Length: 87
Image (cartoon, rainbow, N blue to C red; front, side, top):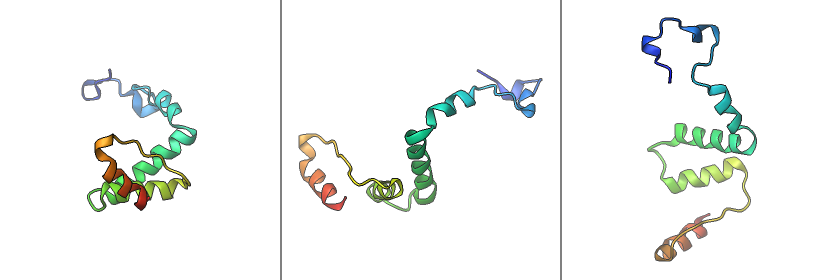
């Protein structure tokens, strides 16, 4: 693990990737990357201003989803029914 505060070389100033971020970025391409980006935008724009359900609806819109699945336990059947009606 890099320790930026104590690094004497500061190779990052020349573009060196001490943390391997470029490798991690490969995981966030395509559909997963689009979902990650949309979720980040929603959090940045609506954090503490919209409910989680409103944020979920916004994500569905932003991603252009036509169908959404909802997993829930039997104890939350009434709540799941309401959420499905909203979605």
